[in-house]
Length: 523
Image (cartoon, rainbow, N blue to C red; front, side, top):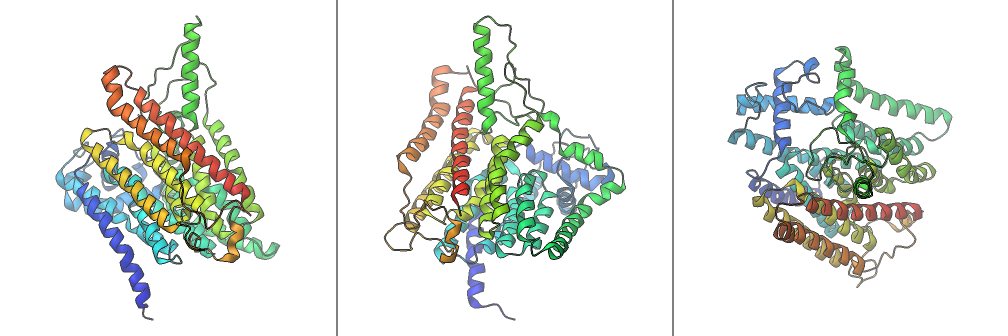
């Protein structure tokens, strides 16, 4: 059966967006690279040089393999081509801290080509949208400044992994629950940090797919369970065969690393840490014998954090319980009324909770909920306003990742261009000049999915409160880049990062509250 011209046009349209993004990514090849570049190069060498049963026990480099097996297999696949491009790159010992033009080019291109998964999933998720809605959605995700900064400068494979998440969500929204569960299971075997949304998937699939009576429901539960178990067996089976399962999980869950990956990751624990430091300072001033913690905001190393001076120490179990309590509202909603068109919001909310209250959270994890919420940004003017605010905060919170002077104009330009794109795109889409102009592509029969307080024909207006907060981002940046060095010189070097951390944590907290209110009021 031949594809229709309309379908071919859809494919060609999205590839124009992808080609523009790829052109910019190619220009960023010589840009700053973090230690993650060496981490992934070492994983290429490790999986290429050693047998499978040594992958999770090797200590040749401090950058040990700590991702699930499917990602290790992915590195093994890439290593075949890497060894042809530059054999030293995949040499376990000679390749340590190895950098060459060919190695840089290969690793950068591997990230660019892996984004094909993201492109495909976006096209699948947006296939029922109107043309203008489709183009704006593609622009928000494919041209996301956060992905440019984290993947194509700092260096990671988030676009590839988020593509799998969006693909899973697209299947769930289509009602193809088995495929949705299958893809999510595959994603978990690539990167286990996505497991924060596993309770949402479990409740939703149990209530939406495993229904229809005891016999039929049990049969479907067996089918879904078998699919998921088959995926995990394919991932972990070989390591179980060699008796390496305990070592694999030890590497994947290094709870000794401490509560925070970096103090400037803007989540709830920033407030907790700041409060502990203030209490320690006041206690010392009042004459109490308090040993203040030694960690600083200029940290960011993966390692044990110093203990809290005054407040109780937070354990992984405490953060786990906190995250579970935080996501309970959407679990209740998914249990009572498992609606396919709400699942993206529920999953995004779960990742927001994981970011705010989780253990050893990476600042890059904000992409886990910002990218899925791009899909819902055009549902209403309120959604657009929330996304505009959240994406600005998320992108700005990533600025400390690129701390070299030559990258400063790039990250600022990416944020400003993204802001302009959103402002004109949302203002045009939600102009309020025509009835239905601001409505989403969701049919009228699905109005029950929306909060009753949302006016679908409202104009896109940020409001004075949002504008004041965003202006505050500008003030924080001016202080950190210009005023602080001018006034304090090299003293208090942690203070600019502390300001970014606290200010962005306030914005993230607002986003969490907004999503919680939306979920609570949705019918």
